[in-house]
Length: 529
Image (cartoon, rainbow, N blue to C red; front, side):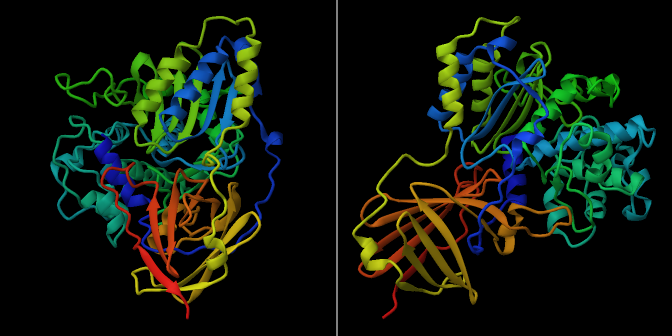
């Protein structure tokens, strides 16, 4: 399962073949507290041990599991919440495949409204896009087969869909269907795109537009956006951006079996079908009981150990639902080990949930509140100065020919920051990096890198970036660029010596996504003159 996800993520993430940075812009302040939907309560008041939450945070930090946010909901109330700076509660976060559970929700509404059934044949929706010869397996494929990832394909259809020049729908329908639908599980993001396409074909609205009055508005999920394909259809399988609290709302909605604010928005029957075991996703002989990716699959929801279920997305976006415990855990992160995150949830959070209210453990509660308030991804304090600063500040380094088409670079050191300036393809781009603190601005990545964030109309958008820098030694200057509406970041290492600089880029995806490779070249240059 992990291998398929790695290949898929490489199709939709940054390839970082080039670099372009927009000028520094101050971040707009948003009054997040006015938009809170959940009531807040003390952990012990809702039967949750503060020390169990502390143990969870300590575990994920000690093991460097890359969490960006955490929200714990018990009995419909938030008992703990925290964001690792620069991530913030008011900011949207890229969900990757957690988007699939929202698309499944749209299908649920469409079924409820009588627009389709899960037994409808897929080919019935797109008669003009069918191949000249419709194979037996394609003809037999039902909506339910796409919901349960049993369409019969032997490979994920999304890569050829994205790489082709024709309609993504037409490409999907033209690909071989090697297995009888319903008989073979394969995690296939093309299936979810087709579900999104079916919603748009039936309603004339994108999934985002269709869900707004039915789901987003009632749950007060505001300002969501969703990447679209070249044919104007929401990607469905990925590309949705919402806040951490919105991820918790999704889980709470399904925990409440489709009810919100006293209204039954989706039928209980649909919710139970969508989140229950529909198909096995591992052979009985090879099943690993310790794996939360081999417990079965519903309608774009995963079954978990302990009889729980979840929606999840690549590198650690989670909406975990605990029906028996009446709890929801929302997590965003960037990790190479999603199973380790879930193990920590079971070992600490699940075991820390008790049947009834508990006496307040004030010492543990006070430590927890202080911990949650001070969460950060900022590296531990190191040197913010070097003798090299006097020699290089404000000087221009002419760069050797490179694939990035970067021709010059400079570093201007200020009292508590450094202005990094790069000239590439005839344009000047700058980024302000705080020395031992974060400076927030926006950036735009050219070429494939623009896939970091796509909007409702698939337009490239500036990406929020928090940048910090430090001296690892007298000659080595390291910048961290955190794109904090995505899970990803860059580490840029600059080594100075003899009027020269060598710059090495490394995406945080390297090492987290299997065979993902850093494609940006090493830059080498010398001071002009």
